[in-house]
Amino acid sequence: MKFVSFKALAGAALAVGLMAQGAMAQDMQFFRIGTGGTAGTYYPIGGLIANAISNPPGSRACEEGGSCGVPGLIATAVASNGSVGNVNSINGGTLEAGFSQSDVAYWAQTGTGLFDGQPAVEKLRLIANLYPESIHLVARADAGIASVADLRGKRVSLDEPGSGTLVDAKIILGAFGLSETDITPEYLKPDQASDRMRDGAMDAFFFVGGYPAGAIAELSSQHDVVIVPITGPEIDALRAEYSFFANDVFPAGTYRGQDAEVATISVGAQMVTSADLSEELVYGITKSLFNDTTQGLFANGHAKGKFITLENAVQGAGIPFHPGAEKFYKEVGAIE
Picture 1 (cartoon, rainbow, N blue to C red):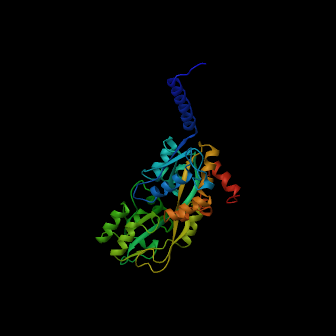
Picture 2: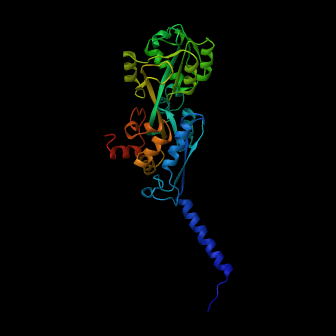
Picture 3: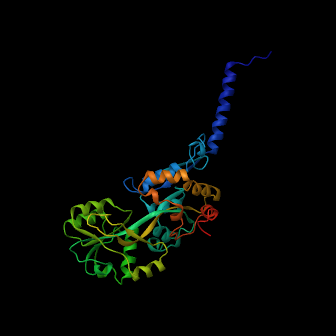
């Protein structure tokens, strides 16, 4: 009889374990999603989506109450500087996906707007439109501003240089025959513009984001402000020219003193990626976003999660869908 030492058996067991561990590692795939600052909306939504599409090796099956994500995928939400930074990181290969306003994605993919004079990010592709980011025009109640046209001659903050809001604000002004020379422009973050308005040194400011926005809610609780409608034939013509804008509305009571709904327009918060990612992977990710289990998690996980629906996913695209996402949407009849 041939005896095998304990040491040899232990070594063999270790080798088998390492082989199994290696096989598991080969089955794993890491997926980084660029979001925004930790205090904003992108970051928590990114965490929800990362959890939804992840399905690490050894997870329980979806039908058994486990993850309904892509087998072997481990996704993480990464804090970032937002839309422009995410697009550049996707283009540079340091993120697999990221969140972007639909206008920023359009400008990047076409080399226009914020990306004018830069090489177009031609491989940028859409996975899903997530939820609307409403364009706010906030004015002092005593400033005599009832429409965009009334901004002529007023002190107006258009947001920071390099922001998507600044470009949107200039487009909206242009739709009403105005430019920066027709107003006294300032270029401040919304919280800074709010402070100036409290001091009586600002008449109005633009902000793009989900409602209710914290800075505006705080301002309206302390001072009389109005949410100015962004509507009319000028906006109809604007939407015909820029496909990434959508009609939107602030429900009555969104902000203190706002007793009736107010019409506006919005851009989409989108999940974008690179055309270089495989069709199979993006198909699996897109499918994971819209099963019943995931939809329930979104609806209960964040105020904006209820907007992440199949119907909204294909609205206001602006840029081409990734082939994997397009395949899923065609399968379920969301697009033709």
